[in-house]
Length: 284
Image 1 (cartoon, one colour):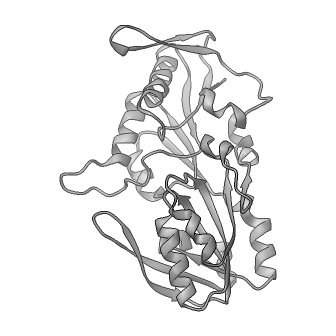
Image 2 (cartoon, helix red, strand yellow):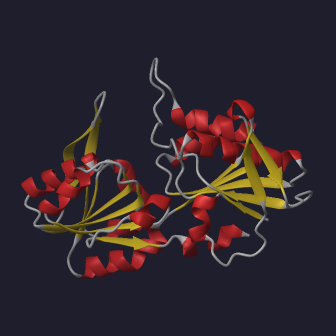
C-alpha cells in the first residue's frame, strides 16, 4: 500500500493501491491525521521528504507513526531527496541535522528508508542501524548520456573525492576530481587530481545555491577547459548563483525531477529527467 504526500503525486500517476488519508489542523495549530484505508498486516510505503516546510515534515512523521500504530507490517519511507543529508558533520555547538533526521524517522516507526544518491551513504548506514537503508544510484539514468559524451571525447570531473568514488564505472575514462576545503560559511574547491580534456562532464549529487559548482567551473576554466555539461541528481536551485555558470562554458545542466520545485523550472539549458524508472522496483 502506497501513501503519497500531495506534492509528489506527479511522480506516481497511474499507480494502483494508493492509500487515502487526510490532515486536519486543530486548535493551537495541532495536526490531526485520519486514515481512510485499513493497513493492518500490510507493507506500507510513504512517498515524501523531510526536505520540506516544518508542517510538511510533521505531517510525514505523523503519517508514518499512525500507519505503524494501526498495525502496518512494515513502514518504508520512499524519499527521493533525503532532507538534511548535507548536514553530515557533528560540529561542536551546532545542530547535527543528519543524525536528527534518522532519530526522528526511527521514533516514528519507519523500518526502511529508500532514497536516491544520498550525500553521505556510509555515515547514514551507521546512523540508521535499527532500520534498513536503500541508496539508489542515479548511474542507470545517466549512463546513456555519459557514454555518449565519452564517445565525443569528454572527460569526467567531480567536485570532490566522494562523488568520484561513487561513479566507479566512469573510471575507465579520463577522470579528475577536486578537493573541497570547508570554511564556516562556504565550501572552497582547491587542488585537482587526475587528467582531463578541454571538454568535460561535471557530475555531482546536489545543486543547491550553485556556489560550489560555480567555483568548480571557474577552476576548470583556469585549467583550460573550453566547454562543459553538468549532471546533478537533485536540483534545489535555491539561489541565483547557478545562472552565472552559463557564462563559464557550461552548455547544459541535466538534473532529475526528484524535487517538486523542478516542475516550475523553465530554462532552455536545463534538461529534466524523470526518476520514475529508477523507483519502479520499490514502489510496490
